[in-house]
Amino acid sequence: MKKILFSLAFLTCLFTSNLVSASNYKLDNVVVDELFASSEDVTFVLADQVPALTSAPMSSLASGSQTVGGFLIRAFFCGGFALHRYYMGTGGKQLFWYYFCIPVVGGVTGCVDFWWVVFQGNDAMMKFKDNPKFMVWTDN
Image 1 (cartoon, rainbow, N blue to C red):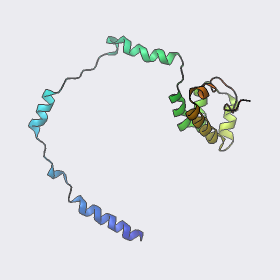
Image 2 (cartoon, rainbow, N blue to C red):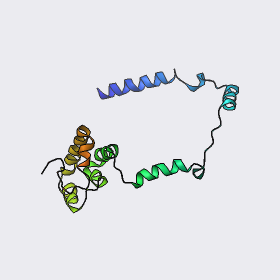
Image 3 (cartoon, rainbow, N blue to C red):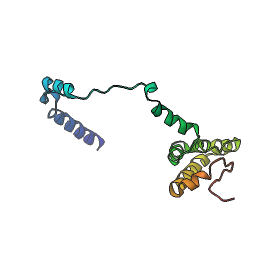
């Protein structure tokens, strides 16, 4: 059955490849040159000529503000490694033991942290800020 299916797929690709080819398309160089001539020239501005654009992002990074989006991205992709916990200032050897030395705990805890912040929002995320507890979502 696999051989028949593979053969049909191969034959279909073989016959349809003859229908579509690049020789059917023609490029008009005069029209392309006219479009380039009528286009707007875009030049790059040096960073020292626009100090307001370069200083705004750095000031927000220097303040150490954590966002829900940053937390959720770290919790989703690297929740099993506790990267979202380090992002919020929670850390230490206790997290190392839980996340890396006990199988499955890191992935399950990262999943719980992610969905808890998705449903509860900024209030839930702020409970992670400098909180040394492992189970942050409990009130104990």
